[in-house]
Length: 230
Image 1 (cartoon, rainbow, N blue to C red):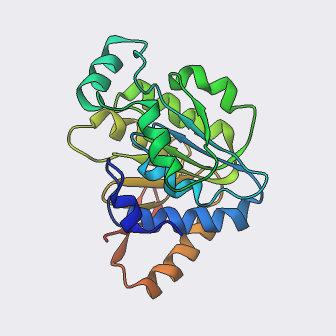
Image 2: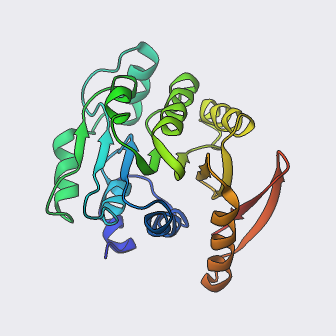
């Protein structure tokens, strides 16, 4: 089992309660969705990838999409990557991942727009979107997730409410208005599906009651959303 202490040994950002929520959705999606792949768009140094990889089952593949040290296709992406992720390299990611898993994920070292037709060749039960803070890129990555997830698969969107990422917030709430059904929110991440959110919410509500984790419910777009406080 990958523990929180293991994750703390990897550089990057992955704050409670999200490791706990990842475990919940990854484990339950295996039962709800059957055999289907896992994907991460934007991996940083591998902190969340390592945890996702723990839940890859026989017949499944984890695909990681990231530019790593390659130049971004436009100036806005290039500036963001150079400022925030200048030390990120593919070799550093591979080394972190290999400390915990014997086989590497499938790595698509490219911009997420170039990865879309490759990702579309398979179907996924869990997609974590954390590749950009720019509105157009995040909007397109959410659309990619919609197209590749199985009907009741889970999409996770990072930084949907941080003050320095208004583009992510705009893309997130536009998607929610246009059909993404939000299951839960943490302080850092949004969890949603284009399937029926009610079984997910019911299971999460029951699980949270036994976990000791604080939560409440909020109403948005006539939907009742679980807000996990931590």
